[in-house]
Image (cartoon, rainbow, N blue to C red; front, top):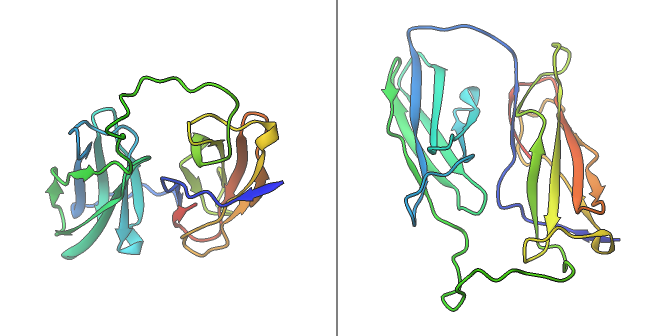
Length: 223
């Protein structure tokens, strides 16, 4: 069995949270759009994350117009907030914004540059046929939940996700090309959160399935 360390072209994010429903007049709204730097087209499903300060850590996904919005950001003084936008096949972009209590910022936009551009001699449109080749990339297919509760607080404490390993032509690898995919937590609140199983062999459809289980601390988890 071959073992591959595939560099994902995106970062999978989860929020481990404590459910609460409090609002104050000091809450901040940050909104904007994520678009393709080359074409100007909006990017659907891009992730925008609040990186710092850690107590405000959160993330949202863009809609079909590339729009995103954070609401209910609770601060009591002028605060520097670092945001990062990311999407499959694009490079990440970070911005730092200074906000005061009750600010509404509606134009914090991001332009993401595609990771790879088409070869000038390649006119496109050629369909790839034949058997899949070796593993080249890993793609997220499904995610049962983007937000889970911390352990022992009730509710859902795990999220199941499915990836497909593909070759350089984008074809899912088959049984003959089965590989081991290793999952790890790149960043988290450090409360005992874990991925189980950490190593998964791809099936006949090139899929690898595993789950994230929460710990006893709230925060954003990068897998």
